Image (cartoon, rainbow, N blue to C red):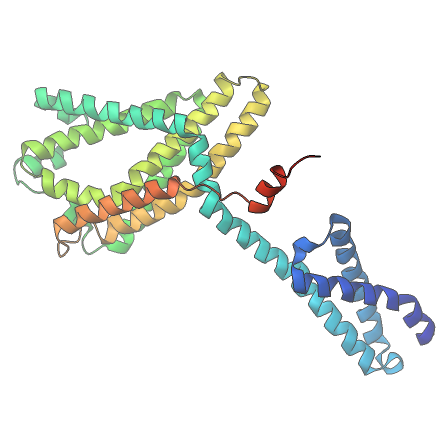
Length: 333
């Protein structure tokens, strides 16, 4: 191996990689053009091969060159691989900060329809259950009916002592309900509509049951903290299902396949936002909502605050880049 000739041939690549890495370290990966990023990756691979060859002939090339190449490849690895991970985490944080609220705003019509279906079911359940007590047996288990009517007790006490298990089961159940509502969009939205309506019907019926037995205040005190996140998450899931149905039934100016891709992407983004909401709601329902040591008034206040914060979060808009605005407003000559 002619060391001098090999070094002379390979040294320009080492210097070029060093220059690109220095730029990335000072100004970030976005400072590079697309071709430069590809060149950076290619140079990193070639210099890694040079390092392997130098180590094999270390007695000839010397320790200093091996050390320099090792430092160069370490810097390259840090920027290419760890830098891409940082970009991935930044993209995730950026989605939850701005992307999720933006998707909710874009899909507000479908979400509003889903919410209306749930509320309509709740009002119908309340109306029929109040006029005909026998109607309750269609939606409320007999054991729950007996507990409320005969013992004047609510059923939430069963969670106490099994909070971790109950919380995880609640999370899984709520996520499954939401996924069914979303997947129901593939049935032209029929299953989504029925699921929203019947869940509302059940809530309305149970609400009537507890009201008739003077247990409304503690019941809604239990529901408010986690319901402020759980119910909106279900409405979002219903909206996602209706988006898919819209892509099938009402593609508009798009081809049906393109409409499905567009609305399916929005539905998928809604799913990414819904899951954390349901995890938090499940933790609250398992540990906070049924806790008898927490005053009921505090539970109401907590639920209201969480709901107000959620609405404020959904109202967020990504700030406009001032430089872009200035560019658009730059006087034309």
